[in-house]
Length: 349
Ligand SMILES: [Ca+2]
Image (cartoon, rainbow, N blue to C red; front, side, top):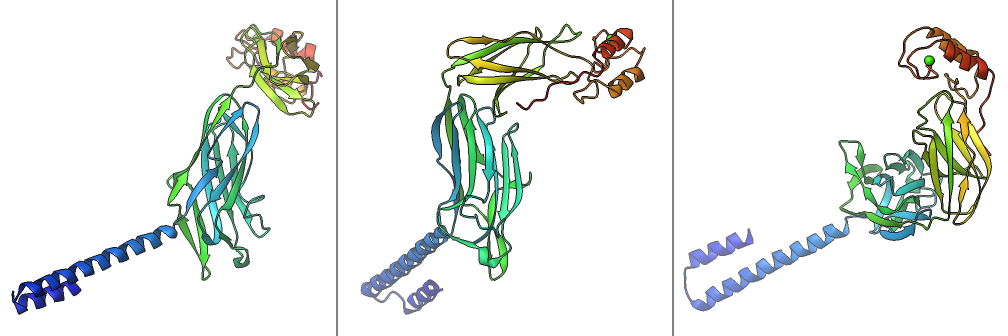
């Protein structure tokens, strides 16, 4: 507008002399500089109002079996934070989540903050967390706000990424919420910093080697073999091959037991395993008892009834065809009868 008026006056006055023309050019220049500088100030102000979200540490090197914590942080100043929704993906082949906290143990630890959503899936590698408060007295302001804590175990050698997800269509959009004058508004993060963690393989200390057979079968694949420590935690796991063989590498020498499980068989257990450095611990061959058709870890009337219902029919249902010969007949009934009222092992130490 100012430029326009100046131009008009310049036009009407005419080209009187060179000095006045210079003066006018100078004033245009000053106006332009003023406009440009106010644009810079405005941009700087707009940037200061933005917020990013980051993982700390953003990188790290660990050995398989190490546990480490990662904090979710908003570095910039945030005023009157009333809620946060966090969605992250990670590589479940390399990292395992033990605990994810959106609030407890972080800047949002007040009792007036409520956990609205917490999903952690170690098979697909996803974390969904949401935390918020309805009380205006519990609003949080500050910079470097810790809005979450993730506790990981370095699972296996490799590179494990942890990345924020911004996918509103999939209902997995990371954002935060602030409250002003009693009104909440959703805010998008202007930028984000993901993380990469490198896991190196720990030197193998010992191993557990053995064989588990499935009663009345020739294919012994698929028995899950869990190595447990004496507090009942799974330390390592594997499954048998078709010969029933398994081998488990053990990082830490010590005392363990094995829990054995295959669907429709009684559970097995091998106690008092001593793993020593540099030496395989050979486990005596185990046989899992067939006939637990309804999976109660006991062979009883319910299993017998299931078998009788399919009796004398050709079948591909291996849960009732106990010896896997394509039909349900007296040989399957014989197995149930022989094992009748037997119970499997309990998994707890
Ligand atoms: Ca059969």
